[in-house]
Amino acid sequence: MRVSLASALGTCFGVEDAINMAMTPEFGDNLTIVGQLVHNPQINESLKKNGVSLVSNIDDIDKIKTKKVMITAHGAAQKTKDKLEGAGFTVYDASCPLVMRVHKTIQSMVTKGYFPVVVGQQDHVEVKGIVGDLKDYLVISGESDIEKIGKTGKRKLGIVSQTTLQVEKVEHLVSKIRGMDYVDEVYFVNTICQPTRDRQVAVRNLAEQVDLMIVIGGYNSSNTKKLVQVCNEKNIEAHHIESFSQLEKKWFYEKKHVGITAGTSTPEHVINEAHEAILKIANEIDLEPVAH
Image (cartoon, rainbow, N blue to C red; front, side):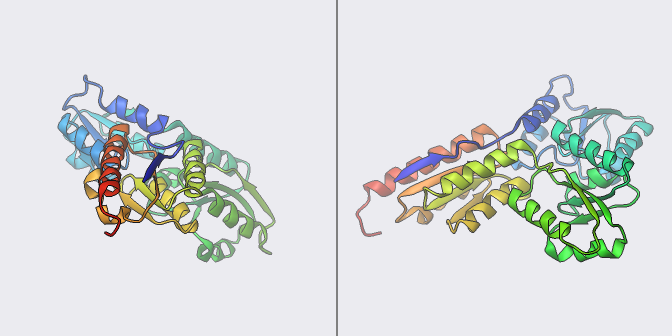
C-alpha cells in the first residue's frame, strides 16, 4: 500500500503567527483568548496547559479574569476590540492579515456605495467579525439564500467571501447572482485565502491518484470540511479525523494508494503522528494474508 502526503497541507502563516503570539512566555497565565485561537483541539489543549484562559466570545467578558486578552486568528469587529479596551483590558490582536483584508475590502465597497454581501456561514466567528461593524448587510451560504437579495431591494452589490470556503462553489454562487434580473451591478472580490486555495488544489490533484483520503483537522474547522467536500465530489472515500487515535484499520483494507491532507489549523506534529500511524497500518496489512 502506497501512502502520499498532499503537496500543500497543514498550518498556514496566519495560524502559526497566532499560535506563536499566544505561546509567548511573558503572557503565562495572564492571558485570555476570546474564542478559539484556531479551530484545532490539540492547539487549544496546549494553550490551556500553558496557563492561557479561554472564553467563548465577547458576551463572556464578565468571565475574563486576566488583564490581557487576545483576538483570535479569525478576526473580530472593531467594536469588539473597542469594547474590550473600554472595559480596561489590554488587547493583543492575532487576526490573520488575510482575514483583515476581507474587513477592509467590504468596508471599501460600502464606502463606494455597494450593498455588502458576504458568502459564508452566518454563525462562523470569521463572518461575525466581517459583518460586525456593518449597519446593513446580507450573508448567504448557498443558492437557497439568493432570493434574499431581492428582498433587500438593493441592485448594486459588493460581494466578498469567507476566507475558508471552496473556490468553485463561491464562484458558481456569484455567477448565479450576476444573472439575476433585479441585480444591476456586482463588484466581487474573491477573498478566499491563498493557503486555502493551495490546499484545495493539492487535495484535488492527489484525489486523482488515490482510492482513500485521510483528512486531518478540527471538526469545527471550515477549511478542513471543504477538503472533505472536494474528495466527495471526486467520489473518493474520505475520513475526517482530529487525531491519529481515530484511525480504523478496516478503512485501509483493499486500498492501494492512501492520501493524507490537513486543514490550515492542523499543526505539523498532528500530521506526522497520523502519517506514522497510517504507515504502520499499511505495513501490517501488506504482511497479512491476502484474504482479510
